[in-house]
Amino acid sequence: MNDQTKIEEAGFVPASRIAAIGVSKILQIGARASARKKEGLPVIILGAGEPDFDTPDNVKAAAKAAIDKGDTKYTALDGTPELKKAISEKFRRENGVDYAIDEVTVATGAKQILFNAFMATVNPGDEVIIPTPYWTSYSDIVEICGGVPVLIPCDAEAGFRLKAEQLEKAITPKTRWVLFNSPSNPSGAAYSEADYRPLLDVLLRHPHVWLMVDDMYEHIVYDGFKFVTPVAIEPRLKSRALTINGVSKAYAMTGWRIGYAGGPKALIKAMAVIQSQATSCPSSVSQAASVEALNGPQDFLKDRQASFKHRRDLVVSALNAIPGLACRTPEGAFYTFSGCAGMIGKTTPKGKRIEADSDFTDYLLEDANVAVVPGSAFGLSPYFRISYATSEAELTEALKRIAEACARLS
Image 1 (cartoon, rainbow, N blue to C red):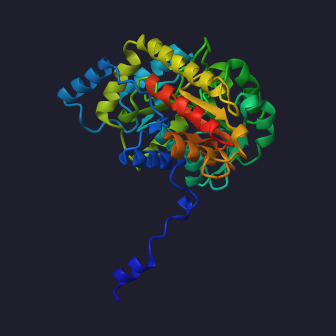
Image 2 (cartoon, helix red, strand yellow):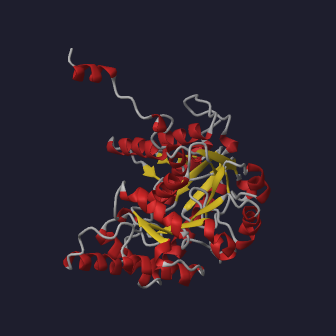
């Protein structure tokens, strides 16, 4: 037996840093739904975390022009000067926050921004406070970087928002960061200035704790809600805050893979070290397109916002009409996070008892051919998430099926 055979028989052993991290439940559900579709079943997937609109034409034209000009080479490590300038001006114009060019970083999506930041700052055992429900990548990235996610449940009665007393109680000498996402994936909940203020006061009392904010859904808010980013409310936190955003959601550019952030110069420099050994620069063409997205016309955002609001209202109304479900009206994003406690303990027509929200979502997929994601995937049960970034016709049919499936439970 040669050495190669011994290795093959021994099998693959993953690194301990990923031993406890599995494939996202969202991706698992998507794969199951896609497999059912291939079998010819009329599956409606309400799990997509991306707008169903197309990238604006002026942005696509800018990308084509960049290709024609030969802007297809490596760029500066963490963003072209042109894109950093556009981002700096965006922060100033829309958020009232001043970030110099060397306080801005650009990466291959906001997920890489998160990874760079945690990898550059988190030592083994450092704690990161994350309100739940939360985007699952947050905790997974923290764990990969050797940190400890501290998950704080925030249910519908709390508006899915962290309260100051919860934050105060969760902070320890090991706390490195607290992470906010507003509007939120998966709940659509958003923090107003009044919501943020007591939380920021807590952070002022704990100077060793840094603040990370994910503002990706900034432009998708409803009912006159006024978006605000924490550093604009409390400039004294600017020296220990990272403000994350990107072009994916507002400009329907998920596949272009551009995320960005503003933060203290030392942090931005440390993040660049991580990026230099991971991906190096983001796509040159995507960066050129993003310059146009940020600098170009913004009027289309209101039309898309109105379309999402119409669909939000349709989904919330239909869900709340189903006995056993309770859906809070979200302030933003394109998700609903509905309570399904009233379904726990019921029995399906096939005799299976629903013990958890994952059982309920499994039932919807198998019985109604509607794919949604259980709240347990986002750290809070019993709930389920619907993405309404799909056509009104599909939403209407899916909601009808969900209502009928719930009625068949006993």
